[in-house]
Length: 132
Image (cartoon, rainbow, N blue to C red; front, side):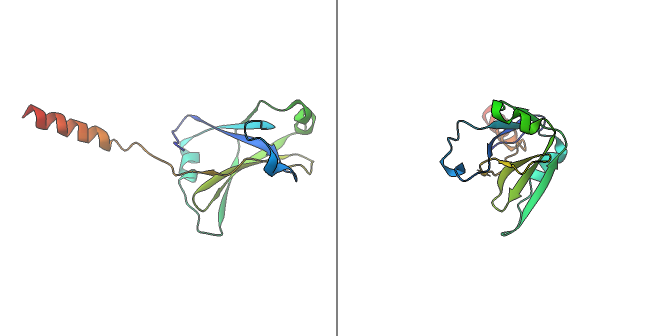
């Protein structure tokens, strides 16, 4: 998973229930979209130790493509967080206010990649060598 600042991270959310494992990954109950700020990216670049996880509360996020049957459940408010487990493995959790329901995303194996500009230096060096 490639992460870039000021781009959206979109994760599918499913109602946590007994039939969760049999759900079609292509048909989520809704999608969670969050803008990857510098602060959020810094939090996502951690790799917790085995048996540990990091909870990252989200202050700003958007729910998209909400299944109609859940709009009333979400009407009284909700809060979301990202969970980072050893791997690193990323998942999201959405908790509707005043309800027992919980929405979760499938875990995503991620290894953040960064463009450090190293390829640019190699290209410049090869151009300089061919010019000499």
